[in-house]
Picture (cartoon, rainbow, N blue to C red):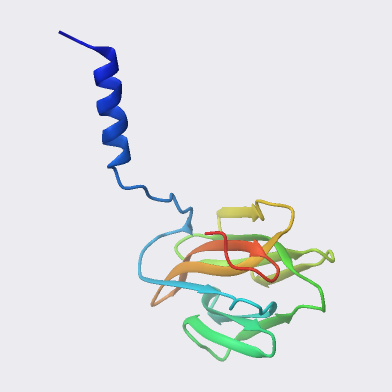
Amino acid sequence: MFRLEAMLSLLVLALLGTPTFSAETYYGRESGTHFCTSIPEGKILTGIRVYFKGRAIAGIQMRFGDDWGQIYGYETKNTQEALLNKDESITIIFGRFNLYFNQLGFSTNMPREILFGTRRTIQEFFEAADKPDYVLRGLCGFYGFGGIRAFRPRWGTVNGTCSN
């Protein structure tokens, strides 16, 4: 005999035993070598450097305080960099890509727009911090031989840790 209460109990138990996962949104192609960086707790983002291979973004590097972090992707001689002003934080990230990224942009709370690369491809993305007091605290992505293939911003409070 069918009992609704028994079925609901089994359904709840089944859901409790199911592993959860976070649907992380990457912009671009999720293939190649994965990377993920975040600003160390107590430090603030003070700059971004982008490396180019032709028109593609080959690598990216973030500056925390006075120190440049690891390069994700590839280091080349063709670079662009932007330093942030005191009390300036990134609140929006956007860009353009096809097979690889060729433009990456940031908007800050000052307000200021920082652009790296050229506006050449069809696909684009735009993401703002999901809470009013959140700022860019890190980047995750994928890169291959030709350059950066995907990005996902990591948001958090200015002096805190990343939210995801």
